[in-house]
Image 1 (cartoon, rainbow, N blue to C red):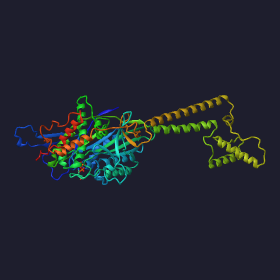
Image 2: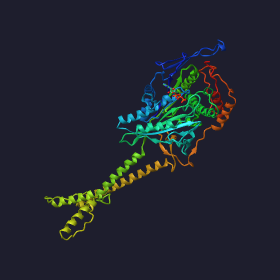
Image 3: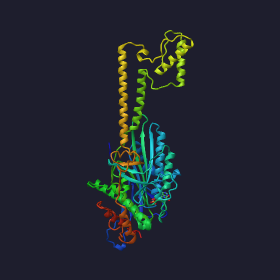
Image 4: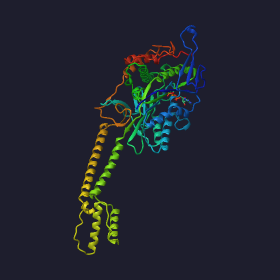
Length: 584
Ligand SMILES: Nc1ncnc2c1ncn2[C@@H]1O[C@H](COP(=O)(O)OP(=O)(O)OP(=O)(O)O)[C@@H](O)[C@H]1O
């Protein structure tokens, strides 16, 4: 059964040297307040708003520890993932506001480790405590840069820049699933394995230096943890997907001061963010009763986050901000975006499935037992030879039988190979005693062994043999059906891929990607138009200046349309080159 869940949004303020006194946090009420003085240049009667208050599920001041952030924001999402619910935590905010610090931090020093390493500690800690639960962990790490996907889990230190990394392509299968072809899925048996994968991914993250920040400011990174959990005795497993997302900086190009190719790339990145905002905008309108198409397929990032936004997922957002006076305009934008995200409703369902592999194993074991049982009844052996210790056992039994004082003593063995061996031993002994052997050591039929001429019992025995034979055929058929079903979900010869959606989307399975004749690449509306627009931006830096504070803060300058990409790009253009005049 699915239940409705809103996206909880939290605000974290990073420490700064010179915090503005125009900004205030109220931890008890979960609010952030910006006080904005009127601009006397625009006259005393104007429509500027002086106080802007934003509500959050929780606000975290500058002295908040990484542990508190994990405990309050992430822990229960991770616990839910162990129970089978998808989860997403994403960080959004201006460059340098603390997104990477919150999501990754420093995994080598426990106290400053962020949400991703703490999630891994928590999962393995849970597995150590709950011996009654088998947890299989699979990890992927995807980087989205300029609208394209890259696999961060290649342990090849020859990768010198982003384009050395394997590309990840979104593909549509014939039955409507979307898969990420080329994205590694790595099993992590231990906490150390998982942290190593994180380490490899971190090393591979793009280091494209910008004047504003020398880290991977301009890419989006999604750390994906797939959890498969089951009790040792159960056929049923839960499968959930945890997406831990570090978005690129949300600020405008004018402020980052990048030029040329970096500016072109930054446009592409903001385009991804723009599509994310569009999706959020549309989801808001849907929540208000509008029947509207949600443009998830317009970018790789929104496609990957489809479940997280409006889908089957428990989602949390951390809005990060700085209270430096210069950063307040961006911080207000961040809070406003957070407000829109908080309106989105997801439907959360437990992803429970019967594991065909476990059932096949169980059926095979059961068949082995049935075959052994049948062989016993028919006086057959499921083996074709005896081990040397079994021959020794037979010799011992024959000795004990011959030397027994009790005249009623019998020779008891439970399969025909052993029976043959005993006869062979007896014959050997008789020969040694130079006595004539009159009877040949033939295989005894059950009736002979049991020495039972009772026809009713023979009939019962035959019925039992028939029943066991039928059971074995039935189990074999079941195994074949399951194997066929599994086979249908597989292609013949391709890489592993992550299934994102489609009929079994909510249970992310590790699948073999299919051949190109069945898979169709998903094209996003982008590159040519990004190029054209970035050209406009580069050539005419002042083409569409806009003071983002004009009009009411509460009136959204966001796009209200999803009709054409060109229209979206025009809006993006406006978004990228807004001026930063407010607090001057
Ligand atoms: N809450 C915090 N406490 C201590 N240091 C912080 C905090 N938040 C951020 N920092 C520091 O500020 C710097 C910038 O932070 P970070 O790299 O996390 O920003 P970002 O938002 O991820 O930027 P980008 O968009 O470039 O990825 C880092 O040196 C980080 O250690």
